[in-house]
Image (cartoon, rainbow, N blue to C red; front, side):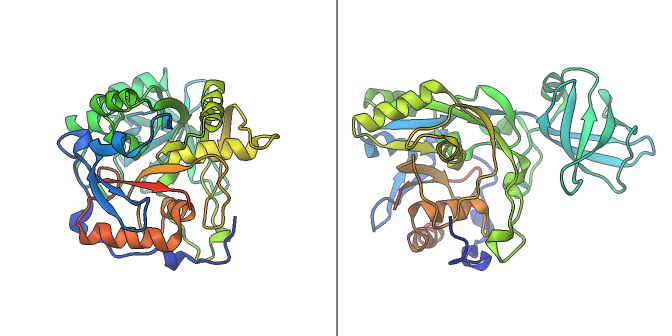
Length: 349
């Protein structure tokens, strides 16, 4: 990958606040779809997707499930605590971000509502920004009962019944994400059935999206940025499906940047080229213009935040100037941006 051509400011753009989607579209597949594969953008609806892909193409989905990772509580002193569980660890422990007025010491007990107590074990991470907490019983069960949907910071309302359903894909299976793989949110059973009827194949990976997906890039020198680590798993059946797609001359379509990162990470982890390493690993892959893609031919993705690593990834995939032109078109055409917003369809350049 190359960091030398671009700086952080190259990935900035001005977005009217009114284009930040606060609620999902009335129906999942009623979102708009900007077809950006050609030189001229085409405005479509997401339900048109099956007709835009070829029979035999392989769609790779991220089957992660968003957990209710946000908790509200208080310290013994009465001080308010907001916790965002980043990862579930063995022995009823979790790794979490804590928003507090004063950092709690190891041994401190945090009371989460009238529900349960959690003990602060210590701090974690190279900068000590994360905390290890011990829950009294299975964390995933407690979070499902007492947690809140971890909506992104640019969504202004508290989570409600709509978010409980719609900030989750219809094919979510494996719990562990604290942010949704948002390109997946546009798929409903009707679109999936239409894809199958058209002869498209499906496969899955798992990448548990971490809270670091919203971590800003603070250095103008992109080479100084360090990506957050995320856990992913690429099954053997998915590798076989990709190899079969290649053999028949079909395209590999990543549903979202998370699916793309998992597949390209697996390719980098493989000792054999062009194979993919199977199984579970951690990835800190930072994709910027100049990266050589090995697996993914086509990408379905939402519109991303200015100066974000996800926008850099999309520019690397489809071309910097091309993506910037598509974003200008999307703003002029009043597409809806970010997690609950509209989608784009892109080919690798």
